[in-house]
Image (cartoon, rainbow, N blue to C red; front, side, top):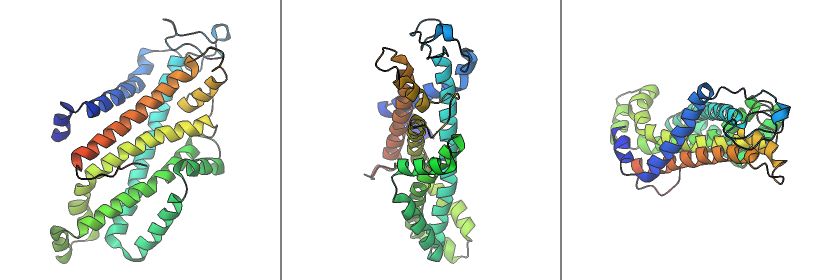
Length: 281
């Protein structure tokens, strides 16, 4: 952590990513308290108003305040993305650790399942799961989690296979250390930074995928504000001058995705400077 804080002082890319990400987080956490407009309140008489002091991001086609909906959309998108990132880390990371340490038939079976999942493009897989389970936030989240799990699995499995060859791990195993003890004391502490880097990339992927699912009508359903859905609603007015309907949610998606990937790339360079591969989806 000290190394990361020190890096912020002279690494403008990492600093930019942290600042942009922090701004969206602050908006999601405190925005609803500072801006008390109801994101679901309909006011037909004030529909399609351009940005002004009363409505800094304008209003939509039924008079709902776009800023209030943007803030609620940030809360929804970030909440789902964080849940997806944590679930993917726990499931995929645990399977990867066990497969690399246990090996044998367990490694073969789980690896083949992950290869089968990876045969599908992540977005197409998430869309297929969302279609199969039905529209909604839960099915969208499950689809993104399923797409993210194999990347954690492959990353952690390869790390465990590398660490198993180190002398201190072999010595602990020869002295009778259990698999749980090996993971807890000798393997997991060495993979923490790798997991964190991948989690940053998966978070950005989750934001983009959830927005894409909402854009095509498979994600979070109206009237709940969600950035992808808001962009879809704004498309109907893209050619009639109401640019603010799609611009602001699109800007939010752009900032979150770029900041998450900036953080992931810079952390990779800090903790693994010899690696030329990008830890991302």
